[in-house]
Length: 86
Image (cartoon, rainbow, N blue to C red; front, side):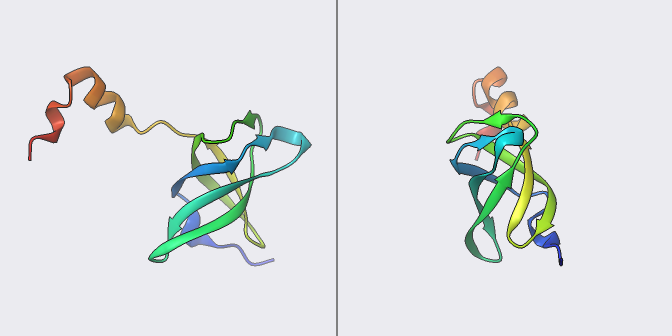
């Protein structure tokens, strides 16, 4: 089965929470100039609305995800948004 390497490394939001080993959820990703939805698998259950990072394409529009926190968001929180000087 062909994998979709364009999605690996992308971040997205879970539209349907994952259930870990019990089954997939659904993630929406920005890719190829638009948004696309994929079945999302994870080792641990993740809730709807969680930000995730795609770590593997499993082919057939399914991906493996992990929960993701953007390190720049944490930096902005520590500096009071000083990194947004425009």
